[in-house]
Amino acid sequence: MSKRTAEDEQVVGALKGGDRPDAMDVDDKPNNEMGEFEDEFEDEFDSEDEIIEAGVDGRPDEEREAEEAGAMEVDGGGPGTFIVGRTKLDPGQTLSPDPTTYRMLHNLTTPWPCLSFDIIPDNLGDNRSVYPATMYTVAGTQADSAKANDNSLLVMKFSGLSKMDGENGDESSDDEDNDDEDADPILESKSIPLSSTVNRIRAHQCPSQDASRPATTLTATMTESTNVFIHDITPHLAAFDTPGSLITPQQNKPVSTIRAHKAEGYAVDWSPLHAVGKLLTGDNDGIIYLTTRSDGGGFVTDSRPFLGHTSSVEDIQWSPSEATVFSTASSDGTVRVWDARSKSRKPALTMQVSNVDVNVISWSRQTTHLLASGDDKGEWAVWDLRQWKPTANGDAGKPTPIASFNYHKEQITSIEWHPTDDSIVAVAAGDNTVTLWDLAVELDDEESKDTAGVQDVPPQLLFVHYQKMAKELHWHRQIPGALVATGEEFSVFRTISV
Image (cartoon, rainbow, N blue to C red; front, side, top):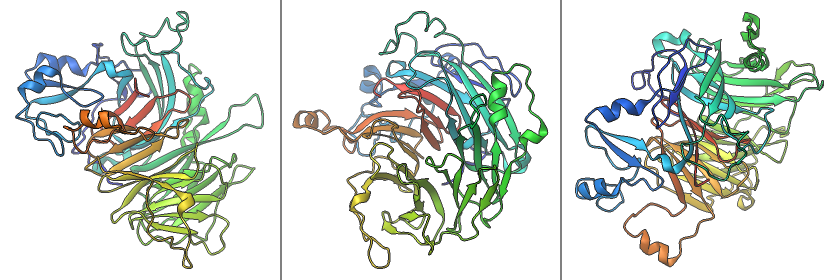
């Protein structure tokens, strides 16, 4: 996974709220305090810059489309067709979201950009549809190289996330529950100092043995320093709902530091099937280590690494259904499947799925024989693991994907299956977009005629969301259809199509 440079993404000021398509006052607050969302569109409308409305199909409004029909050059599209991530904007042009295509849309800015984040499960209930919404996240920063000591692990609470003006959707019509749906969004944060850029961060909750105590929430942070830091952020989360609560310096210290890796890395994952805590980490030397948390709370890293990749381990995921099985993606172009019980520490299956780096993978939680992967040239594919058969040397040969798409023309930086729908996939790419896909869509003859002028735009493409420097995305598993993505800033959104 490539990193953003601080020069490209200079972000100044304290952690604050982000942007809405409608006007709001700007009110910057110090770190760890609430902030209101600012209106980025106010200045744009006052200037002479042109605004292009880019919605679910990526087209401008009819008047602009007619005016610029002969001016736009589109890779793979017909004259005048605007495709987000493909069409080059003229000087002075900017993109503006079409509010009618979103149920919810908020942009959030942090002191430094974040390469990676995770969503924290909460006790506010599942299948929530009442606005304003609340969610908890954890992220790691990428400060300027000259200011490495400015890096931090950010524990954040987003609240007051209201739906779009005039958006009714299919949410609860209970007026009492939705009285505050127009409240201003609030971002609160707790900062844990770090001295190195965060490459990847993942969270895990360990159920409490005492019903009167909250679950323990752990984070594993892979950094440029080669060390992996494990923090207990339980007190930081509790502090959001306990006015006057202070975090002590001791609570900011890691509860464990993994020093087994000799190179930095990007691959880290907690097992969803081990409540106490079982962690895999992979580095740029292609080496993978397993760390286990004991019932007493201590962490032990097995000194025997898993070996097989000939280049860096870019991503790693535990199987959602088999407690000892995990998969890895590598810049050697392979996806490998492993059994943690293996004495040889070698992969059980090896698939050459690309001739370039495989950056990310995602294992379907609903249909667990499906695995999605995304590579460095912008192609992503879905694989049926039942078709992967090992040979004598563990190499399963050249597989055939059950679906593949090369819509994106820049590297795939993140991919994730919808948590409850095994046909929906979200993809982030280096072309400044987050795309939503429905693999269940089939193009009939009539639809083929309608889309004949837009070549290379698959019918499975549901939605295109503009996200500058898009890096990572996650579905919120307790708020159906809600997505959070990080790039130059955070986007929290839900479309009308999912």
